[in-house]
Image 1: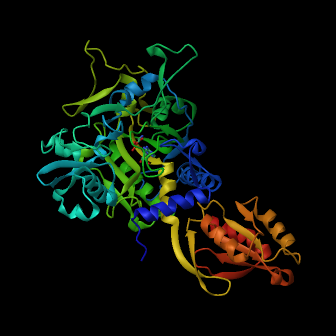
Image 2 (image 1 turned 180 degrees about the horizontal axis):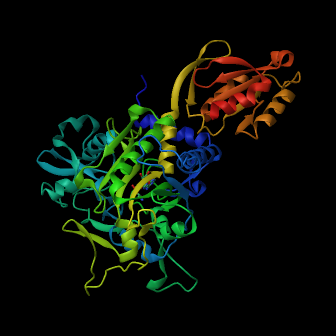
Image 3 (image 1 turned 60 degrees about the vertical axis):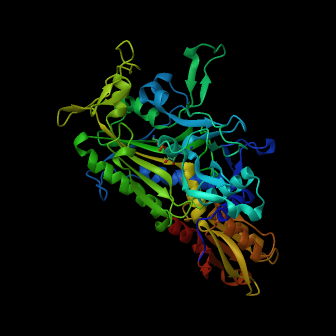
Length: 548
Ligand code: GAP
């Protein structure tokens, strides 16, 4: 059985992603830019298919007259496309300006910067010398990294590493410092040669800052690239209500770029500085919000399964009370066991949060804080609101029940790039197939769900003569208006199958000698390798049905 969690498997996935044009490092010819990624020809199609599947399943294809399984009632869905740069007050009221930060520490020696919560370490001793060796590696890579660092620090040869005495296992540096078990003077930084070079932790706001206008200079010109698409939806809540016929309960969806100046972007595209989100803000009556939260949690979980992610590698995790944001009544994460994580660890694909009335109230009244269990406007030193809201009325009036209330919000917030990465990792398979002479040949095959596959079908004339290319080109032209397909006549048919397997193309159609006599083609299934003969005139309808 293939081992699913290991760095070498991840390395092979990253290498295929580059070799086949799924994902490239941004600005690669200049050495790349950490935390930024470009999608190549196959990648852009895969990502578009993920976003299109989300939009179709959640918004465009939504039946607002039906009560869907698990939903408390019918509901409406609509969409928005908001700007990346918004009024700076948006981020002050949302809390991002004051609170959206990570703790970072710097190394005075190596000049490297680390996320405090990403550093782990353990005590090592050799001939009376003790040091707390830290690493910024994660998963299975972390323990050997501390061994290598301790060996270097103590000046040992490889055969002497067993002389190092270790106390306890790897623990979080943050936890060890907080517990008083370690001091910064004891800690050997991940890239340092001596202990005591790590600085005290400092807050680092993750929002990218920019300036508006040619004469930008003073504080009033400061603006931020949005760190989430959600706020554009909240500040347009009234516009949507006033200009469309939606009634609560309803959802507003948005797909778009978000930016976070992550201290340590890592694990391929998993933690990037520029990425896309697919977010829904679902507005409902406060009394029904618990039922809607459960509906959206289960609905979003099922979406990943329906698109083929392996159930055993997915996890739905409800947050513990102490993990919840200060405004959240309940949150669940949908997580995937990415191969770069240690066995048993999962990485977040999507969060489904019950946000109560926090967001709409913040944009009405000003930045809120929780005091004695209630959300109140945070006061500044002068007793006035620390960050003033818009003052606009964002409440909802139900003209049937004659009730007025501030709707509660359920927010399913997914990362498009994280989704793509999970679909890439899950699709990656290495197996053996018989070649043209019946001998086993190893193949790499991307088993994407057909809806997500960048190319749905390849049309291959067996040979470049005898009228086969002409028939194949006619079939290609018949299929192209309905789905992404490719015509390929270069190389042996075995090599062409191999190319399509790596691209994840679910079906190959081969035009051979028999086609010319009985107008049938072979349809090869990527996963089962079963080849069936089908009438050429039925191909378009057959594949369209399979994709429906
Ligand atoms: N509006 C809520 C919100 O933004 P979040 O958990 O911070 O919540 C939602 O982000 C999703 O966005 C995550 O589940 C993840 O899929 C994606 N995401 C967040 N930060 C990311 C990053 N640095 N790189 C790639 N995707 C990221």
